[in-house]
Length: 600
Image (cartoon, rainbow, N blue to C red; front, side, top):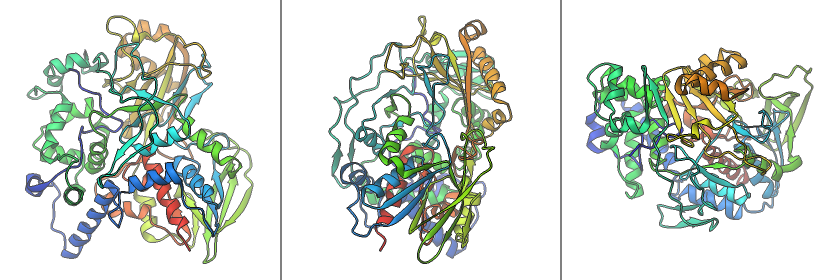
């Protein structure tokens, strides 16, 4: 059976919490191991436990924060305040919008400032009305929602935002979708089960077809063919061919640390604490070397599992991400584009949002804050050329919900604490670039080997290409004949190379890269001539795709990203252990809103 394709940041297919036991204590030896002074060792151990509790969403009182946040975000909101505060929220991405929404509904006087003059949403961005067929749309940013992120799915349902399956692995064309998605259900470690009671019956994703393509080292096979004979591809990387798929090899490398989620929560905290303490200084490359892997095996995994450009990143963030997202997870997408969710939040806030206002300075005293902004008159991907006018806004408190890379270009008076400044400067901001191409027909769905959804992998510059799970019209009319393909999706150094090209050059290179996979005749004939690209590193309000930690950055820098600075609170996915996911943004929004709402 073809394996499921790897998830959004799927380096490892890990289920449940990780157990370490004796294997962690002695099974791996860090290439850079050294003895810490006793005081440093104690601090590292304390930080490791705090990170473990954050990862598992366990409060200081041992409450289940996911359960608490669901009740606040979906069921009852924050209690109505008897002491309304004037609050400015900086940034109208998912975190800022949700923070403002919660505080406004609780009775506070809220203003949300957004630098973009033409849209909200931050890195949730849907291209609409940009293709030859105006009914088509495609994602420039966030595009899929795993079922292990109940806050996001339940918020969609609450706001009437429709969702449907996203096929992370390809399926046969014309696979039917459920008439309604199932209810969002979350079972807490406390034994309590939360559900929104919405939707239809339970849903099981269809079996993977395994027809998407692998095109590396001069070989071209389907995923099903690779699963049946892995050595055909693996041997092309040199060395002794190994007889398993790269994904299976990765799973085997970490299975000794995997324990089911049915373990008592105290045991999970302990196991994760040891994991953070022992492995936080490992890069992914170091981790695989310490497992006894040879270079050809590492290179094969790097190429086929999208690891190559991130081998030098910390291994812990990847393990955390994929411990929280099961290998058999169901993914969802939002009808009309992911921006439909942030559009709905924007409507809830209405005139609370002030567009085209970019913060340049935040001053605070013992009694309030003052934010200085400059006017922005253009899109997030085109710098404003209109002379900027400045204005100031006074409030009791502020919530800063913009990326750390954008905070870097703001002045704070008095200066932020040293630990906060160090986190702003030091946390690694990753690059990601997408190139999307429109085609007259969905040629990939045709013939005996046609498929829908899923993705292809190649060693040419495109690296990964993803295909639409559904094709429908924005206006709800007749189904378009064509579709939009995410022809190239790259991260890190791979993305920076694309960033050096002009938008037109990106489209041309991506078109020829896709032709290398499918054949020039079909790809060039069916291309409409319309292509779009999105570089998140060059988006001058985002200044990067997401905060992805390097070795040691979680223990040294991460905690300071979320600490309160006087009258200033901080939100955003970068303040959580779910960076790059909308779920992280929502978690941070509820936390920040609670912090501020509770102030006296």
